[in-house]
Length: 101
Image 1 (spheres, helix red, strand yellow):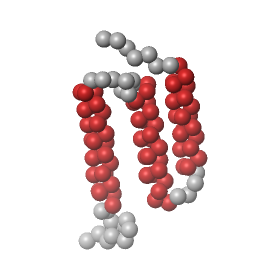
Image 2 (cartoon, rainbow, N blue to C red):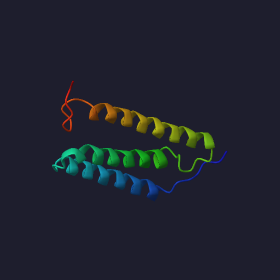
Image 3 (cartoon, one colour):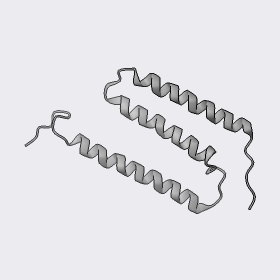
Image 4 (cartoon, helix red, strand yellow):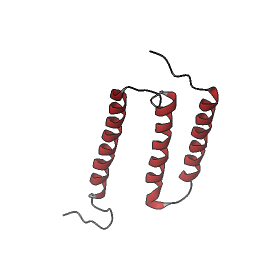
């Protein structure tokens, strides 16, 4: 089995993107966006996780289908967890005018 050789320049570019996204995350956290702070932070965190997964963990260059099944399954469970958490949060009393019985 041969390894894919990734140029060093690719790692530096991905690292620079991760640092830029970290700075953007810190800057956005200081901007009062109301309810949009958390979704924007989660989108940026997902982009950072994808960069690490694809380049530093070499999933982008992997040809095994089972690897992609595991990656897609992991993101499916992540979105399921976040979706169920949000449905619990949105149905609590005191949020958006809902009243407890």
